[in-house]
Length: 217
Image 1 (cartoon, rainbow, N blue to C red):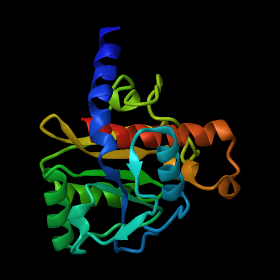
Image 2: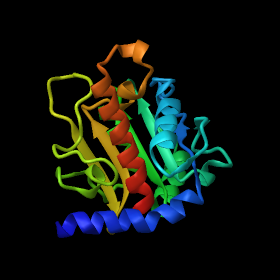
Image 3: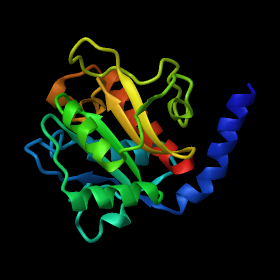
Image 4: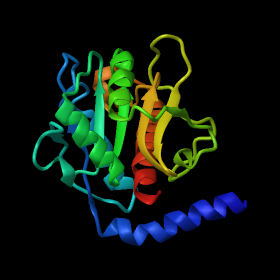
């Protein structure tokens, strides 16, 4: 009960701030051959769901940017996904490290096939940090909607359980890696994957939780 009251208090104190901000998502355009542009309807659908169901003021259009673009620092919430290889230049590594160490947040969502290259590249960004599995009672699973069992399983890949892995700067989460879940597929138009509505709803709600947590932590 005490923990629940703390969560509600944090959310209540954050609402007035959130209402004055316009939230947007910048999808990272990376090199290496991976399809960084996959699930094209996912981010617009998530932003629409966020706008309809939370007090967050939303910029409805997805922004696509390379890490070396001049305006990338204006987007503290970054999103990265794909199926294939990810390759970052030395300049991109420096920029990403700077953004995340200075208040930014990255959600990396494995669309199946990017795991090996993502772990390799993020280790180049933060050589002294390790991805930490999040327990099911972490605040990110209760920041707006309640997920008693942690990260939901949206699509089956290798018959593995979904994992939420994070990097921290002190106590602040700077990166969330959702592995073996495939939230982006659940955010896509219903005609793309023909997922049951409860499954799509679960993916969208988890997306809201991730965004909300990044703003209130």
